[in-house]
Length: 354
Image (cartoon, rainbow, N blue to C red):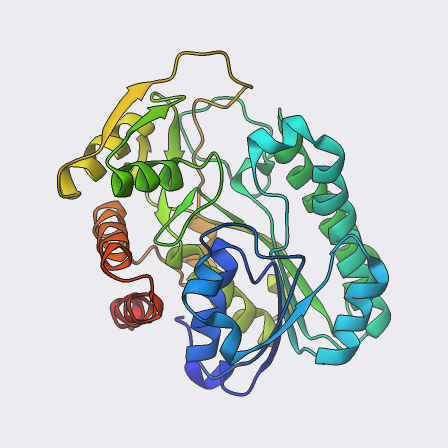
């Protein structure tokens, strides 16, 4: 199975968190597929912003609202009449979750409750994909990938809140949607990277800000291993999952969308490889100050998505790094990044075609 433009043409879609990094890429992709797209998000989360730089708002209905506000998301569903809902609105930063755990739980847990309850009451949404995180698992520092049936957990408030969101999703699925017309699944993706990531305390945003400014970047945890993948890989998984759910209610379950094992690399390897590709290189030093806890090893086992959905990771890590350097190189030449972003979506789609 691959992303089918015929499925998405004219399809009414509500995307929460559409102004964020992943949301901006998915907004542009869905627009290019011809979807009738609406977005629901609190604000523009970064400066600069991929959403603004790419002009993503021009091709969609953009609703400003807080996922913590049950009435606001209920009103958005009534206004947009979506057939498919992809829920990505979240407080997504691990370090911020230590400084503001209450906001993290309110957004990631009760925000999910608010959305799913609004879907329950409305009653006519066909497909809901709730995007959580690879960090939802109880991390035991294994060197092999976690499977969908592993226990939920999380050391830090962000990771734990995503584990809680998974439990909420499972409870709503069993209590309200099982055997009904609404198909609810969750999606857990590895560390996503790509052009236009300006989030605070994120490796690639820190790296590329430093590279563009010719500065030295401090790296907190160079030995940590993460399942790196270009942002288009998991977005491809979310769209593929939504298509499959439309026709098969038995697929309403949690799904992993992660890279192959060889693309789970230490942070230091990533930095050195990116530096080798960037003109003039990227200078970095190890930040040895005390920082909040971060897991050392994290991998996903995505064999179930490959076997049941026919999904695969299209761009490997080398291709992802090349695409990132190309994107930020285009940004350095001109802040109008719409063309390069859409071109990379088209290149990815061509590579993904059967």
